[in-house]
Image (cartoon, rainbow, N blue to C red; front, side, top):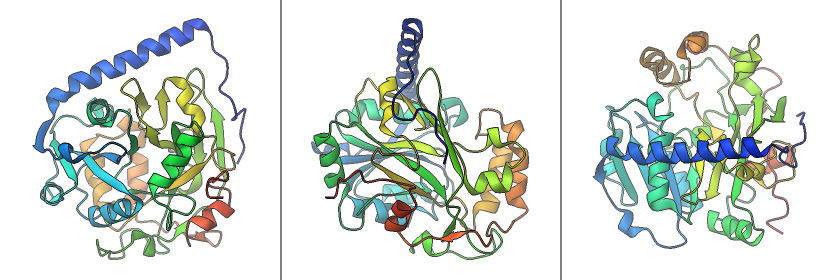
Length: 348
């Protein structure tokens, strides 16, 4: 991985600071207004206790992923899930309503028009997440970190508190099968990494962007497969999925970046020294082909959907993503050894 000045945020002018302050206020205001788009289907928030780690998710039609998603994050120590269902029609809503530790809101409003769900989730974080450690993840993302099989999130967040850290970054790592996309079968009650067990160990590149100082990591298999001639459009792979939330905070672009800008210093990318994890991205389960066909038609992803038609078409062609250079996933220790995440000594 290559990097440019990842340790410290670049200096900016007073004018830029002023504009960012107003940008954050505008984002919070539009999130506050977005609450009118949400209908509460199940409110279990009275069960939230001080110190609980909370998870905030927007989803649509994820019935295949939800069983393992809940199992994974419950084992990590998530105590409550606050979920916005964006018009699912595959049984996801009914499954969510049947969970004892889930509060559910529903909306049929535009996902793209809500900043890809950020407005809705920011409102819920303002209302319920203040002073909690909060996860912002998608249904196809499974967080792993050093010792996650034996040390719950509460241990990690307690250490982060002791270190005076308010955020924990992660690389989004795309996992893929060995054969053509969409050809296998998947049991929703099983670990998706049993099927999606390959990844690209690199190359990844990172740079800081001005004026927010947010990291921008690109590379990996999706760039290799679908954006080889348009690398600047390849997916952003850095995230800040775990934050000790304040109602003054706002994510700007998914959880790739946040305001106030000092929050973006929590992650310095693969090979960096800041404590970090990996979000195992299970996008390429067998249903990805039909889902891509649907999402291409709905045009709810990406700021300019017209630029990404070829991306969907590439998935619809059911390619083989595996190469002899692909690495078989074995666990968090492997990812740490490859420099894709760091513990910075928190387990010692």
